[in-house]
Length: 307
Image (cartoon, rainbow, N blue to C red):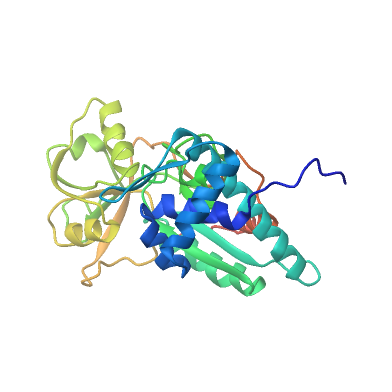
């Protein structure tokens, strides 16, 4: 293999620049990397000299900010460093054994269903793979896949940020959650038209809130929202207390709230479109073998719907 020219800068210099930019100050980078501030500052200065461009602006009161050239260098440098780390891991693994970290993004209401399977089953099969969890709403996940902060994510199919690669795991229609003594609890199904004059407990976390309100708006209805919460379990707890009804997608085998009050689930009539749950991963770079193995494992799981 022919190499045109060996570069005059090192991966260490690039890592110093990336870390200082991420943390915002040279002193914070020095603390994280356990080196002196002068070592990082001198390294960045030398890197700028070799690149022939100013990569950052350093202000004592305002920290460190990348220039346009610095952002370009940092983005490509991250890929180089990741590739170097993968090379090292590949050389250290035995007989094709998978090793290294995977950062998994997961929508909070999916976490109780998705993560235990992955942590238990995949973790047992590949003990040298470290699974790190980031629970976040889908709107906050935008850009994290492309930047490499998250390797793979489990989300609802609606409002998936960017243009990632994707595979569907399963699909559930939304349902109505009621207190066990609710007047509608004896019905087989519930119409949205019958709910609009009653208090709703809204799961106010994108994309759940948009999906729920969209179902009503498609039928020309405006629900009466009494309380908003970003917590799936708070919705169930308030509903069980008789403070309103809820509309949720995720299904649990537990038919009681945290406080032990019983809940009932009713299907919506006419039936609403199921919402798919997907695994997504970046389209701007190839997935490393351990991430591919995790995706294949997730797709192969029998995600049984339990009502």
